[in-house]
Image (cartoon, rainbow, N blue to C red; front, side):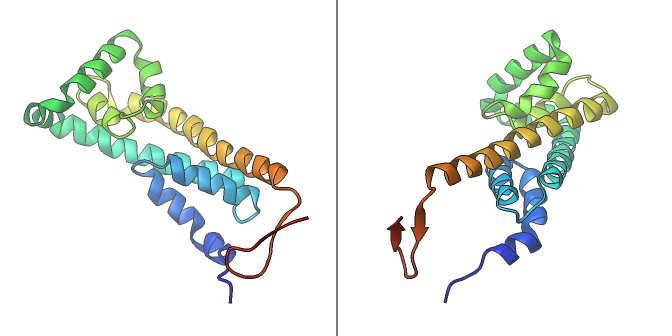
Length: 170
């Protein structure tokens, strides 16, 4: 008896995408993009849900940084180099840094918290961050969608036969 993933993805896919993008989400967005390519989810809705989850998560981290960031940086000095790097980037290119920090390795969640320690107004962060979240969501969900298409092209003619681990080449 084979387990069907389709109904599970259709029922919980958007919720999983939202929950996953609140904190990190790249892997989940790739999988959601793949699910949309396979017809289980709507691609535009995956991008929207991913952007909303990513933006909301970043707003929470920004506010945590605004209220507790300097104390946490003093308590955990190992984050000081990342904070110095983000502060320097903010001083040079404020808008570009807010847009790009979610794409930088190691700064996806720490970046908004560090930005919260700056003097950037919350409303400005919300607006620029929403644009960044939309770009980020479209990028990763799009990668999953494209990878799904590429996998189909590569595996054309390969059929999964009944039984565990059986593969037939046609």
